[in-house]
Image (tube, rainbow, N blue to C red; front, top):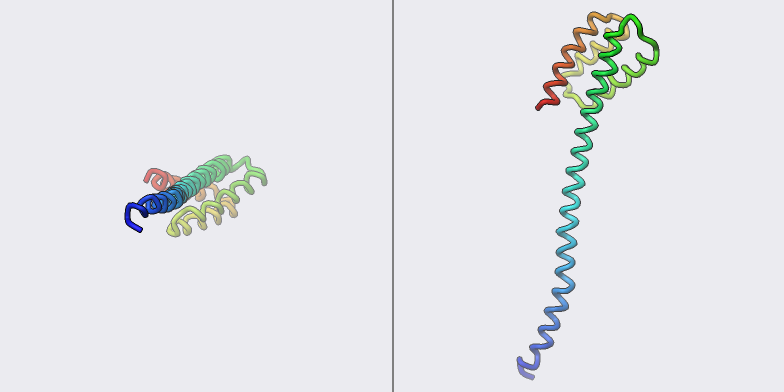
Length: 130
């Protein structure tokens, strides 16, 4: 047998190999790209959740402190929930101020709580504007 007799078989072999390998490599590239997109989406969703929690904190806790003379148990519960969710998303350096704010709220010391929430509001602003 000569090379010219094997040429069609070699061509068929290469064609079959490529027909298997090209879709395989395409699928691998697509899967890699999809994983990258999923990671970016999770990162975006986490950032959006952080913004939502921080805004909720400012709204619920700040609103409760401003309305200090006219609060009900439901507002206190909502503010407490919002306050404690913030711990997940803020730097550990903020914990002292958050703990202090919690103590002021629990003691109904609204003036002290007001100065504390103002400081935390500025920190949140800095955090969100990075």
